[in-house]
Length: 295
Image (cartoon, rainbow, N blue to C red; front, side):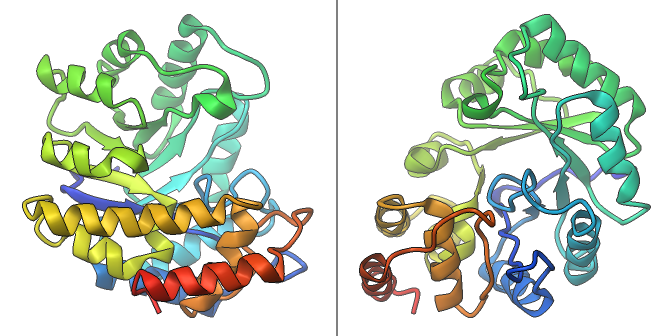
């Protein structure tokens, strides 16, 4: 079991490139990881939302996790998404990982039906006690229907095998820090992309998002001086947001597939039922990538 304390910096949520039949495109995946490490990523999340954990085939899932661990080779911490709708199903996901070397697993609250605060707390307590890896809480209320509250975090902080939380709730993060709630091996990762510059300037220095993967040059520049250069930070974030805003004009995952192809990491990053980006949007994405200096 790892006792790694996550360093300040950016943490990309890796995309998972697959063939039309669903198998992993290893060369593309490997290249993505190398781009992120070269850009200065302090760790990676594999099989998160951007990694399509919910739609990747069961037989491919452990292969993706193991490939990530092998390619990273302990250069930075690796976290693996294990989200599911019960403790037993999450434990099944953990079991198929075998004994790969990772820093922890990332789980949302159950998402098939809405859980209340007591049920969420019980879910993570049970998982922490039975997981062979450290557990990171993924606060994703847009999917789970159930936000992680400060009270829930306070209670779960007592579980020594819970090593952190990923959340877009900046107010809660500030409250956690203001009240000195964070123990040494508990990391708080902020995932509210639109306010990453504000977060950095206020001392919230661990940021996690999938957009880092398709903007390695801007990501590197943004975190080179860890928010000390406000002009460079703001410009780089504005570039990332500019690309994001073009991507969401249609299906964001289909747009992401095309953008990743442009930086040399081809594959299907979208679920099999998604409609590919239109030719009109592809042209706009290409122009945007050139404008922000990624290609």
